[in-house]
Length: 195
Image: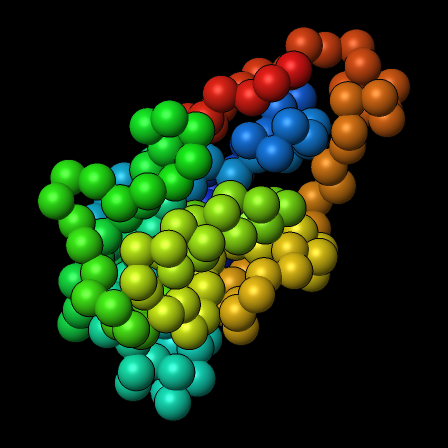
């Protein structure tokens, strides 16, 4: 898939939003990618996952034994990525503020894991998920996401393979441009943000 193909998929799903948004990272943006809408159609989710997996070099793909995603945003794309690879899909969640495996999920020590996210903005959630996976015995060999909006600054401790890089500007609360200062921020994501 080309970048135009991917953006067409976002537009077809009404998943590329414009306004004033408060991101899970605590930063503000005039653009929001609602990956849940993008992935709500199973056929589209499968196409996106296959295209994302194809970005990962074959030698890395061949060693992946499991896909683990952070809940909530990474669950669907992680499941579809696992289907494309022919491996199991697990997810970590934050019942008490930090990621952990629950629901009977377990990793055999040394299992080669691909960590899959929907959108990476700062990389904080990805790093936290990777740490949790390693704590549970997994060996994270790579990370992948549908979108990298970090402008290449995510600084993950493993090779990172985003399907697309979109560099919409983001702003700290004290550096909002005038057009965002004039409107209230909407929080469309799944995670609470300290304001």
